[in-house]
Image 1 (cartoon, rainbow over the protein chains, first blue to last red):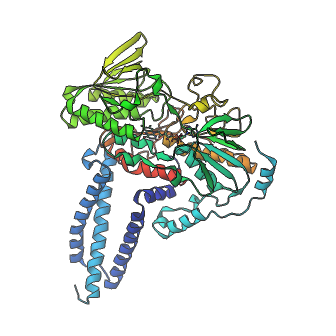
Image 2: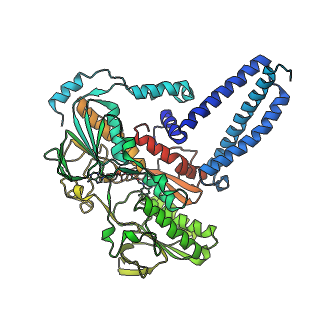
Image 3: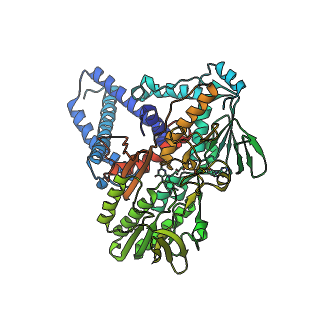
Length: 118
Length: 451
Ligand SMILES: Cc1cc2nc3c(=O)[nH]c(=O)nc-3n(C[C@H](O)[C@H](O)[C@H](O)COP(=O)(O)OP(=O)(O)OC[C@H]3O[C@@H](n4cnc5c(N)ncnc54)[C@H](O)[C@@H]3O)c2cc1C
């Protein structure tokens, strides 16, 4: 795997995830957009909601690790070196941040749309 | 060999847009692709117009990948893929099936689903290669004339060279052979699992010929050790690895690392042992040694047979005529360009190529674009400076859940893809994750000419 071409990564991910890749991409882009628009509309972060979203995010991080362990027929207990800890942190981090942003955005829009002040 | 009409065709090269790639780029750019893509990653989108007849012998990893690359770059070429086997085997998955990690179906798909549009698939075996007459003849007697030939027939597993061996017995009476087939790999898992429940003597080996994925015999030895440990039966078992020469692996630094790991796991090793015959009923394997022969009784054995070119290639003018590969029949190609040494319109890619390293799917990934580049340059009347450096890779599983991502070239240099992140000689989970999650998608993308 010399000359690592980003396109190759993309092709591989597409092969690995199939339609799930597009669903994930829509979730990532949609979630980020919803989050950013919410930030602008509310002119800042709502601290209480953020804390709650982060708590749910923790569960999201754990779920991401469990999923990863399942599809790879192994466990993060097999970690043998720094690259492994990096991967574990990455998977956990992505699960946490992704879930937190989605939960924050969903909760924010729910309050916005139902017209209440949080 | 460039034929005059093709040359003029090539000079009239039309601006043919490669729709699939364009569409793909557009999609990619719309999504996360905007982050992933950089401008330089788009290849020239122009196809070369030609009427060249290209025959690809064998539709395995190398043949399919070559067909995809050619179809992407040529417009109007008559590309014919010839292979009797309708099923496609993802062979690197055999190890995982035999380890009890994946079901047999994980490794089986159909050839047809990877054949690119515009390429004809002929489901026949080639019986004769006639590079002087620029044609191949199939078993039914049909002749296919070509301007260019890509030989990608892979290799023959020569079980018959082991006296007393019977492939029908794989899975029974402690006999395993992960190389044989998806069913053979699965049956081997049954035999291994039974052995891991009882313990006894486990015998492991590799042939003295060139072989595909020289790491696989080692991986399976480590996997057996781990299964025994997980079932608490390691103490009841003796594991013996028989090397065919004085090394465990052709790359010295890797061989040395394997020696240390074997020592660490309590795996006994014997050097200069080559399996000659086997008594399946009595469970005795007979090895040749520099001093004569020696018998080794076993409770479980993983047979990896000698490997050679398929008969049709072996009996053709294409193999090496001198040197150590005459008996095995590998194609006499230039190790950098993969072009045949005596027939310049013939290329050899994949396992059949007579080059000092390779014989892995990972090598195919780097060989095919080089051979295709030279072939396409011939058609266009140009020259190519693409060179294959011997890149070979082997995720060497050292226990369930860990592997070493060993990558190297002709010079025995380690060539890590992720230097500084994934250490090649370290047993890592991330390397195992790649083997179990990313390798098959990468392989399939390769068949489609996308990776
Ligand atoms: C147990 C095992 C583990 C492996 N592990 C790995 C790994 O971890 N990583 C890795 O990179 N590689 C691995 N490999 C190696 C990899 O699978 C091969 O190197 C790769 O498949 C080679 O591709 P090929 O196209 O040359 O041969 P193949 O994929 O074998 O295809 C050859 C094709 O040619 C056809 N053919 C043969 N003779 C004729 C004829 N006369 N006419 C027409 N068609 C013919 C056959 O039917 C076949 O379809 C492993 C292989 C095995 C068996």
